[in-house]
Image (tube, rainbow, N blue to C red; front, side):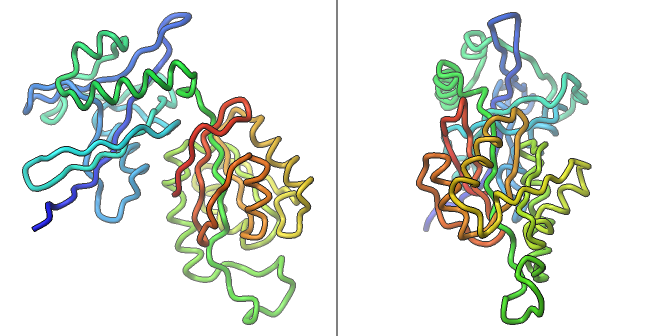
Length: 287
């Protein structure tokens, strides 16, 4: 009989320490008397990036955004195999709401060398090595661009009016709401959309929830030329703020070409999270 898979997620949270150094955040769990990185099990149907951000907040008191994926780690626990997805994460501010509790009684920042000595488990030390490899490449400072295909729209044959005005279907509106915590997990602060109603409606719930400004860019329209898409992507890569660009299936190949990648054909309402630095794509993941 196959072992039960227990999905979980967490992060290596880091901050600057002095002019050149960094520190990472560890938690102490009194029940196990161990030092580890913050993580926890996913709630039912919870996307793992959302799990990571939620668990980090619950265990450390810090609100964070995810910056770059780290290798998945699996290990046997009572009840099955724990499968943990990891990200590099950065605090949104210096404030922590942490209070010692039964699950975590201490949270402390360490320089990586000191963290390696303090960590209890070998798999955490291997994870720290992966993080340090990213630091050597400055990839821990990666910027984020989410390329998002609009959610499911009313079929063309069922809509009377211009295609640009075609709205989301009921399932599309549901997916647009589901995207709010996912975009929040990556700290999106710039929201750009094609002018079409269906793309605007896909990001509207996030705009309403966060108060971020919605930017309309016709260079992301379904009929946009490759040159226009190039200029739109160049502008998005140049911003420091984590961004989402909502566009159309026919436009995706031009977006990928501008990024210099061979990306997937996204299902409606799905996104490709592109982690980049100085115009170079370092990693990508589906949401």
